[in-house]
Image (cartoon, rainbow, N blue to C red; front, side, top):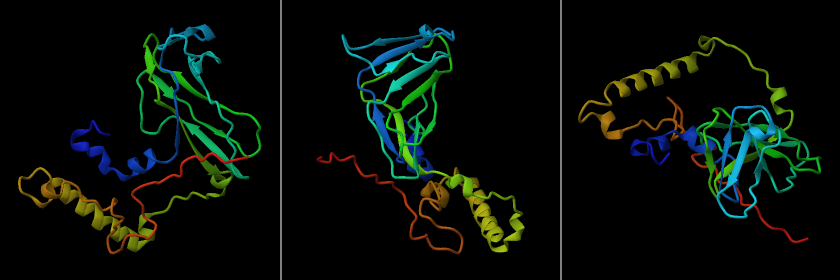
Length: 221
């Protein structure tokens, strides 16, 4: 985000919200891992970058999978699962996070966070305090209640009209964006979505530009 030209990535509100959409689990000790290309457990090697430090990552499953131990027991409210995935929008070269959905409302055991190598003989480093997992709760069974449909846009004349107004505005804005002194060049971006604005409509009251999650608290017994 910071390395993009003029911090351009921060203009994408969906990207910003996704980046804040969960809690991060951090690596405790830096290490380098490498996959030789084989399917056996020993094909993944792990070397700590701190003398005598125990890494929380091991080779457990084989198949080029790097497994992180999650040294905590998570419990959700009844009917809620926990999504465990890699840090969103944080690609890492030569290795890809795998995503799991865990029923943490009933199980009295923890889970692992797994990454799979995508290229052999490519050493990858996880630094101290680098996120290796992102977690957030989802309501179990909600997706099964969704009834997706294909509809013609013309079935909703108002929506079709507003879409065409926006599309034309966007086309004109992009056309003049590189014209010196143009209104588009001065504004740099339209901010319609960022401000929650649609043609003929005010911003909805629950439109948000940030996700402010609560911190984990330590409760007394």
